[in-house]
Image (cartoon, rainbow, N blue to C red; front, side, top):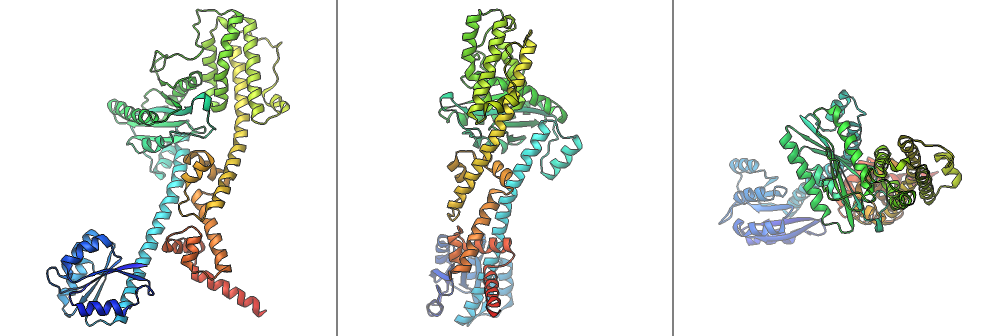
Length: 554
């Protein structure tokens, strides 16, 4: 229903207009009236009418002056001028102000109503256009975010040539040309007593905050880790960008009770082709996060975390040789970190993680044959137990990871490290397959939730993500990957299928059906129906009636 405000200094004319038109029946609401522009203006600002009807000649403030003020404060309000003077100068000035309609007095109620309906149709068309723009931008933003994430992933991992980077970056409006580049990795994890599901990320809004900063691009990796690409024109600017990003992370995570976080800063490089190197070196340090009970900030060029007083749990100096018994006790303590890696690590972390294990145990300690065998047996059993908990059988685990062979001779720390990589790599491949099944299950859970709640007009991606316990970014990527549709596309299809069914089976108006289908705005429902089905709700109903008539005639 469109709101109308009437300004007319002659009470008799104002009264006649108010009583002649059946406002509500015609789809209008008279929200206020006044006898002059000066009195009307504050009332108009408060009621914010869709249509202003005003006389042109009034005391204190005339209609043209009032129109100028309203156009400045409420540019979307349409203005109908009433004038008893057939003077072109008035019409010309009204046009310059942006008046929608100019009517000469005396004006009949029928003529005014006809004009109001014409203006109302213009308002509906404009709102439809605005709704189209809003829905397009929403869908476009979701697609662009996914495409940008994939692009950055390929750039950072070194999979793109320079030509591909330039051309694809131009298409996605990502400009990577800079003097310096640096990688910053970030991940938040629940403390071990409340380890979250893969994909859960309590610091999810950090990505939105950081990506909004100039010179910074980022994407969320599988498992919730955030890969941040810093760009700058000079070294000072790079340091500033890095500190700003770190400040966002620290301040946000300070409010996250029960969670720890890790960051790893790679070296600054000067070429796009060297970004992969910064990423690789940052990743090597980042793999150490699985050996810590508390969060840390790793910085390239330092052998220790930024907080050098903190040491990895179970850290051992190579100069201190453990007895076989003490070594077994030492390794028992590290099993927790093995499980942490199996739960949250990625394939690209394997090399650095295994190297860190060997370094922390110490080459001298690995000179003990019994200890070498103990480590390999324990890692295999730990991986096997983890995969069993993922739902795999013993035969499936043996087929993928092999079986533990106590007679296999591993004479050097290099051979131990190589065998560790084999076990972990195979285990992560199997875990990810199980995770894909879990993702499918979560997608189905999301679909079921949407199907139960799609008629609620406040249903959103964030609400669905919260209901199934994952981050909105993770759900968006997972949902598109598994269903082939964005969240918005899937929700729209459900709502329109429901609306079409109501049109076939009820006598409800299109506006009422729109509300039942989850659209509180009738104009928006009209727009999305026409855009998706290429016909208006009325045309669709007529087509149903025509089909039914043709069937009855047979």
